[in-house]
Amino acid sequence: MKIEWRYSLVNNLPLIALWLTFLAFNGLSPRGWDRVSVPLVVLGGFWLVYYLLFERSYFKRHPEQRPGNHVISGLGWIMTFLIVMIAVIVLLKFNNSMIASPAILLGGFALISLIRDSLSVKKLSVEK
Image 1 (cartoon, rainbow, N blue to C red):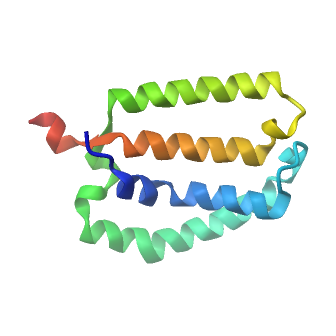
Image 2: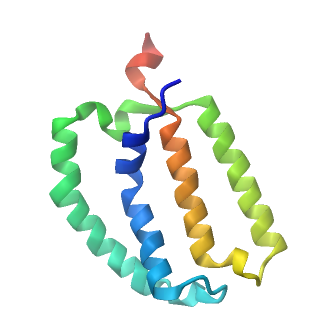
């Protein structure tokens, strides 16, 4: 199985930017849920610039990297399910600790997306 790291990185760069922005503005505070608006505005601006300047031209040059040309593999779904279950257990068990901070959870969701997309396969190889 080939790991699609380039597709995963291009597809999840805005989510990683949201996580880094949230870390920069709020740190690891468990009480940061009420301050999500500033990172979301920064993410909206970044996502627009990212799409207009990079993603459109990248997908024109590399049409095989488009999200519509990939299918999540069974291993990707299993890994996603396990990581989501661990994240839910951690969130419920450590509700007011630093582990349940928004920055840690956003980082976890970015990791979930990166792993899921890196374990995807191209549609052409599935159809063969």
